[in-house]
Every structure is written in structure tokens, then in C-alpha cells.
Amino acid sequence: MKTSKAPIIGIDLGTTNSLVSFTKKGSPRIIPNERGSRTTPSVVSIKPDGTEIIGEMARNQAVLNASHTVANVKLDMGTDQTRILNNRKYLPEEVSGLILARLKENAEIYLGQDIEEAVITVPAYFDDNQRRATMQAAAMAGIEVKKLLNEPTAAALAYGLGGKRPDSKMLVLDLGGGTLDITLMEYKDKAFRVKAVGGSTSIGGLNFDKKIVDHILADFNNTHSFDLSGDNVAYQQLVIQAEKAKVDLSSVDETTIMIPYITMSDNGPLHLNMTISRQIFEELIQPIMADIKQIIQAAFNKCGLGPEWVDSIIMVGGSSRIPAIETMILDIVDPERKRVDSEELIKKAINQDEAVARGAAIMAGILAGEIDDIEFHDITSHELGILNHEGEFEVLVPGASIYPMETTRLFTTAHDNQEEVVIEVMQKRGAENLQLVSLGNFSLTVTKGQKKGVPDIDVTFGIDLNELLTVSALDLDTQENAEIKINYALNLQSV
Ligand code: AMP
Picture 1: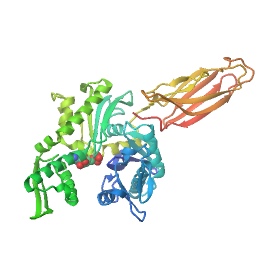
Picture 2 (picture 1 turned 135 degrees about the vertical axis):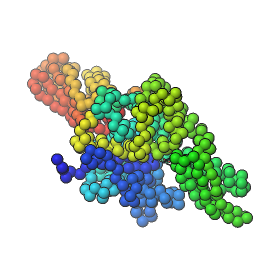
Picture 3 (picture 1 turned 90 degrees about the vertical axis):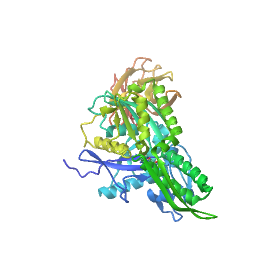
Picture 4 (picture 1 turned 30 degrees about the vertical axis):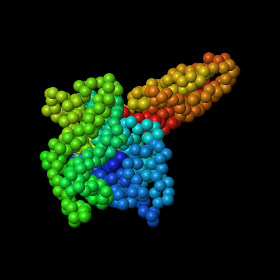
């Protein structure tokens, strides 16, 4: 049945680039921005007159207007690191909020409908603070978050892993412009579970560009005895051309960087004309590749699994198109190339920039009831329980429980003549850094004049599909009951 209800959009709020998507007739689509591009740089600039510039225009003027431009704000989410733009302080969530508002607006123009709801992707390692900041950014943009979806889970959904497909053991490599995320993840019993995460916020495409830039600077210096790094305009041109050359080298063996009149020397204008082969590029990036390899191995070590455990490698992020990356991953996972031809092992058929956004759209489609042949559950990331009469934490919902779920336990009073019991709902966070946090409390009246231990009180914890936690207490003698509803979405991580 066709409905006129506005779709739930999917948003990949990335460090370098962001995308917005939706589901049409059960398949995910990327929404182009006002310039017709499918990706929007996650860059914000405020002009002196207060005009907000977001996306490609903000990125293009970033060099000239660096002090009024914010890039990579995702790396600061969950911190109070403010940036000053046009004499006003902005928190990371406010900057992200501006990006989200623009993405929402693009979707509204494209779809011709007001949009209210979205699935937003976040890195699997985002903690509560970072997730909360993302929710706040969405609220500022007038978006109701239907779900924060882990990026590797989104990428897996885009590849059709999960749902009715058999179990999978995945290595997700997300190598973007400035960040590397490695996730070892399993899909089993209809739930995605993260086994280990690893990565770096200082490894990405920019580092590859820099290697080419440094190589050219040295070569130019050798040939012309001229240091181009002292000439700002020349240097910027070089950075732009180096990135283009790097992208070329993912599909050709050799490319030429040519910049006529790149600078002026005492003897007249100088021109840059240099050929770089893929082989030289691969030699230049050797140290970065060694770091990436180490990070992947550390992730395996963390969860005690070996590379042979992996049955699907999912490659996302623009930089994962570099052929040497694929070679390196295969060297780790399938050194003898026994499995590489199976087509099943390496997943890279979906545009690497778009896989996460497509997965977000699929999740939006599932939530909207448009896609019904995929079923997957979330699991809780923390233990949930209550404080008993001695003030000790009693677990009712162990960590990694699959929900929707419901569980009940019998409790009683701690004192004679007790007239009410207070149910303090607690969660225990963190495997290493244990922290007990109260999520709220409520009280239940019990029949007067009873000795301690006599009343029978059922306490029930239930988590529904929408991540709403309901805790109720029922006096079995009087049928008196009370409950509290806690929107637990922030504290549940879909893994
Ligand atoms: P992302 O953050 O996922 O949008 O990735 C952006 C990064 O991917 C930039 O550093 C791009 O230069 C890089 N990139 C995009 N396409 C390619 C390609 N074909 N080969 C190598 N790097 C690429």
C-alpha cells in the first residue's frame, strides 16, 4: 500500500564526507545534494555576515578562511572542545547539527516532503558521550533519531549480510580521508556482535597524499634547488594534484602531475612535470601500510581470534580503493590465496563511499516496515538491574542480551511495616572501568503492617523493539503496580 508518510532517511555523518539516503521500493538510494554530488564534505564555515556555508563550498575556501572553517568535527564529538566561528563559540554537536540540517534540507528538496526521522550511523567504538552528542546534533537539526546504527553493521547490511543469510564472520575495514576503523564482527542468531575494534584517527587518505607531496617537493628541490613548501599557493596546488594522482594510481600504473608556472624563481617561472608510478607510490606508503597491518593484527589479538576466522572482508571508505590495501588484507586473511576466488571473501562491489549510507537506508526501510525480509536484533551493551535493600547491584538483564526481551524476578521488603519500596533502575557500564549509573527510579506502595520478607513483589524489565525500557513492579498480594519507562536508545548499542 502506498502511503504519503515522509520516509525515514539514512545519514552517514562522516569525518570527511557525509551522505544522505532513503529506501525506494525496498532498495537503498543516495540523495544528491544541491550541486548534484552524492557526497557532501563535512565542513562548515560561517561568513562574517553570519551566513552558514556547508559542504563543498566550505571545503573549497577552507585554506583561505581557515580560522572560520571547521572540518573533522566528528573527531571531537562528545568533548567540550569548542571552535570560534564569527565570534561565537560552537560545540562539536552544534557544528554537526549544521551539517545534519543541511543534509535534511537536501533530502527535503529532493523528495519534496518534510523529513522528521532518520537513522544516523556512528562508529562502533563511539561511547555514550559520543552517541549522546550525535543525538543532540540531530535534535538541533530538527531530526528525530529512530536509531543510531553502527557503521560496520550498516556496511554489512548494504552487502546483504544479516537477515535470512547464514551466519557471517566479518572484518570491516573503513579507510576514509583521515581515519581508519577496523571492526571484527559476527552475525549469529540474528544479531550483530562486535568482537573487537581498532583503528586510528590519524591514518587516512590525507597521509597518502602527503607522501606524494613530500616526494615531489624533494624531487623538485633536487632539480631546481627550489623549496616549493615555502610558497603557499604552489603548495596548495601540489596537495590538490597529489590527491588526484593518488586516485589515478588506483586504476592506472602511471600518472603525470603537471603544473605549469607553479612558482617564480630568480631565473624566471618554474614548471612542475613529474611522472609517478604505482610502484613508487607503493614504496612511499610502505610505513603507513605497516601501521595499518599492525592495527589489524592488534584487533585480532584483542579478541583472541585468528585471521582464518574471517569469512567476509568488507571494504568501505574511499581509500580502501587503493589496490595495495586489498593485497595487504588478503596477505593477512588469505595468504595462500586459497579463498580469494570465492567472490564471497572480499566485498567491494558497492561504491566504497556509499556502503554505510546504503546500510542506513536499509535500516530506515526496516524501521518503516518497507523492508520486511531482513530480521536482526540488537543486543544490550550494559548490564541492567536494580539496587537491592543492601544497596548492592542485582543484575536482571546481563550485558549482550538480545532484545526485544522481558525478564521477571521476585523481590520482597527489607524492613517490618515497610509502606513502600523504591525501585532504583541501574546500569553497569564498561568492561574495565566499571561504573554504576542510575537511569531513574519509582516507588510502589505495599500493604501496611507486614513483616519484612513477607510481601511478594515481581520486578519486570522489558526492552521493546524501539529500545524503550520499561521496568515495572507488582505486589502479588494486592495487584498494586507501578512502572517507569526509560528511553534507553542512547545506552543501547546495536552491535
Ligand atoms: P571518505 O572519507 O570515505 O569519503 O574517503 C575520502 C578519501 O578517499 C580521500 O582521501 C580520497 O582521496 C580517497 N579516495 C577516493 N577515491 C580513491 C581512489 N580511487 N583511490 C585512492 N583513494 C581514493
